Amino acid sequence: MGYNIAVVGATGNVGREILNILEERQFDVDKIAALASRRSLGTEVSFGDKTLKTLDLDTFDFEGWDIALFAVGSDATKKYAPIAAKAGCLVIDNSSLYRYDPEIPLIVPEVNADAIEGYKNKMIIANPNCSTAQMVVALKPLHDRASIKRVVVSTYQSVSGAGKEGMDELWDQTKAIYNPVDNKEYTKFTKQIAFNVIPHIDVFMEDGSTKEEWKMVAETKKIVDTKIKVTATCVRVPVFVGHAESVNIEFEEFLDVDEARDILREAPGIMVIDKPEDGGYVTPVECVGDYATFISRVRQDSTVDNGINLWCVSDNLRKGAALNAVQIAEVYANRVLSKR
Image (cartoon, rainbow, N blue to C red; front, side, top):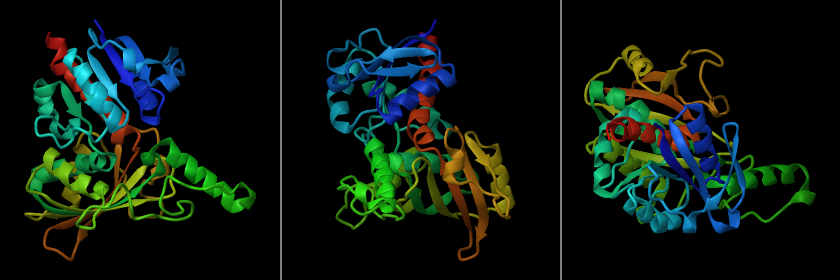
């Protein structure tokens, strides 16, 4: 017997990707509903070889539905997620609204799948920030072996992390550089994104960091280990899809770089492509559409006693959002729903 699945925000980038991944991974779906706001009512979206018309989120009855995968902003989530949860439908939320609630699990299945039991608290599970998700997949197996003391990460985040508006703005700016007649007013980013990089994602906080940087710190601690110290610099780059990260890891004990590579090769969700030669690494454009988190440029850091550097790349619309949400749904279906 299959499960009844609702995708909330089905017309957005992440919502459409969730539908694609549910089909690709052959999730056991009995009924599926594509939900959206009234302004998108009736918009058609694809689910495998089927075409779904979006239904009105505002009037949808979640009674009898097993899982609702939310891919809308925090404001809409705050209104509708409790309604779904109260109806007995598990909410898997992609917004930041519930990530830091101690009663709500924040899950990356390769890292802390056992936290699924916390669903009982509020019938809500949070999906982490895109930049955090791919990093902790790489950190966890190394932490299990040598105990991570400190992480210094610099991110190179694609414009799709800012939604369709971010992708449109990069496209429009790029065209305008070659054809000034097409020049438009830009509103999504604080500075030109075409042929540029912007060290600013989300709002600034009192200590001078941005909220995106704070998210990586708080979420890594919640998902992996509260003792790990993390400092992050998050940068938006002129790439449409795919986040990259330069990660420096300091361990409590020595970890040989060859052993680190072997550990990562055996870890779930990771693909190691690491040859010290031209092209022997993965870039964002090569990871698009893939499930894996790719690790390259693994090397010893000689400036500290127990340090390793690595390069981490993943499709942010997949592992950073839609894929991770579907993986959480799979864990819930296997561990909870199938036992009913």
